Length: 297
Image (cartoon, rainbow, N blue to C red; front, side):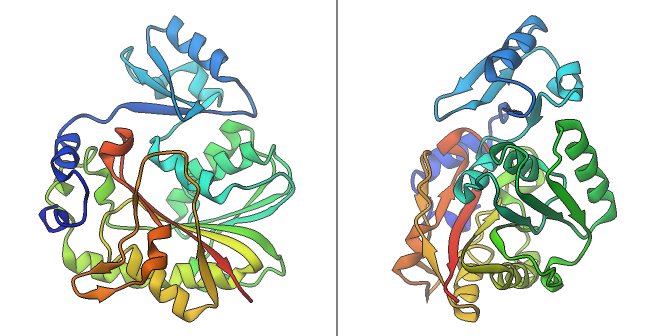
């Protein structure tokens, strides 16, 4: 992680947070429960439950064992999700009745979150390329009571034209996952640079295809859980050059740092400040990068 010292504000707090266990958070399923209903049930099972200040539908859960092994989880009352991960769908802001594509959907945390916000109306097309991950996606859709979603299996870089004018697209790409270092200590020293350079090519293809699939004037949110500029700002800069589009403000209700305007001598332009870098010390959670793009034609 040392290569990020010059670009991460309060780097010492960043490192200190990486050394601490990550709190467990759950997202209450609006289709089946309320925050109070879930909190009361988990407290009866011996958990300590604290709503997050910036979103009452996210609960921090401490003690009591594994919350994923409770009956309430099996019934689909909540989804175990990092607090930072919930911000991607907040940025996309899917509305009831819209047509939304989740290009890299499995295992379904963000797909189910979108369905909840849309009230199970409209249409979500949830895509992934890996059969094993698709099985997890289907299981989570069933468990949480989602009924407005169809599932497809394609390499997102070559996703076909289905004849659907998507209002919004979420592209939560595979990445080096440095933002999950608290759960995977092997990443505490940072990801392998060769892998970062390799996966960035896949990410560019996915974001470019997402922009091609959204309707003119539609919105794409690009998300990673890594800190590497090669996978974040550099990918966004590539897509902006390939498909007529512009960066929009994210309007997030949480602390974050702006996107980088420069990295190792390469300029990305001032507009990149509209992106968000959520570091572990911001939310005591994982790391995320978010960019919100609007297709111009």
